[in-house]
Amino acid sequence: MNRIGIIGDADSVLGFKAFGLDAYACLNKDEAAETLHKIVKDDYGIIFITERYYMEIEDEIAKYAELRIPAIVAIPGSDGGYGIGLSNVKRAVEKAVGADILFGDK
Amino acid sequence: MARLNVKPTRMVLSKLKGQLKVAVKGHKLLKDKRDELMRIFIEQAKEIKTFREEVDPKLEEVYQSFAVARAVVSPEMLEEALMFPKTSVSLVATTKNVMSVDVPSFDFKQSSNDTDSVYPYGFATTSGALDQAIEKLTALFPQLMKLAEMEKEAMLLADEIEKTRRRVNALEYVKIPAYQETIKYIKMKLSEDERGNQTRLMKVKDMMLEEERQKQLARDAEMLAKADAS
Image (cartoon, rainbow over all chains, first blue to last red; front, side):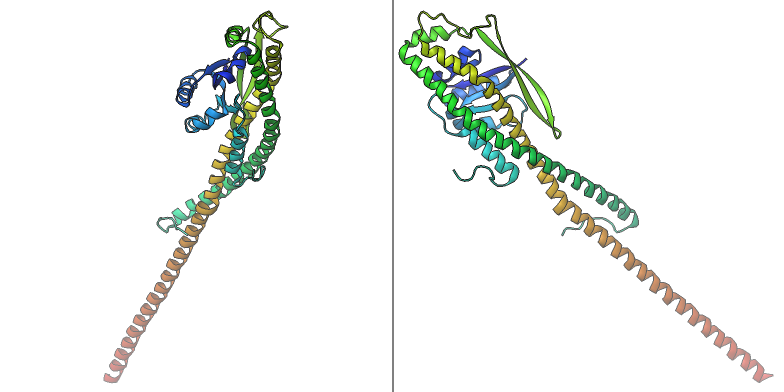
């Protein structure tokens, strides 16, 4: 049995908390990174991170890219989307195919 | 092209031939693997793209609803209302095997003691906007899970494709040519040795014949001398 976590600013994670996720409200990126390192070792299956923090702690997240679980996924936060999710897929495509064949220049 | 640093002997030659065979076979298999992975991956990536474009705006809607709720209800009240979630989500992560890449597959269950309501609060102190927000989030959540699953799968596949492609290229452009080059080199070297040996033998034979002839001449001369004397 795995848990689902969400890391983000307080406004964003509030609703998810009501839904029953383990919500970690963070004030800044250091706190977010720290939280990530802490909970990644627990039995989380999915960790959602709001896009702003995702952007800021990308290097930290990359360390866990090869793990099968948890899946660390960027979702838009309450401050709006930055399109990180899509650009992640775009990067994966570039890595796999060698060129971006799906998205074009955006 | 780099030739392998080996001794040109028949033993090494036959070993290299075996290795070349394995390399060629492996190259073909890996190439097939790469192509299939690529096909799956591209399909997946397209799906994710449309899915993302669908989910992201919906999530923003959820946030908007929460924002409205926050505007209507005082922060303390909101905090209080959402403090103890009534439902809990549990996730069963299993492994799916896609072309020998282990990818996670998530199956989530929302457990609640009260089946007909996900709202962890009474309706007296909160506004309808909050109900709406939570309702929307509940509806959206399965999609978010699916998205997480697909994105993770795509990332893992991308990794695997990159690795496989490197292996294919290493075999195709480095290993196999090196083997071929070395095999060719050994073959040439061996036949060169063979030719060298042949000529040496011929030369030796010539020398022996010459020696024999000289001896014969000497014997003949001796016999002639003897005949003259008598």
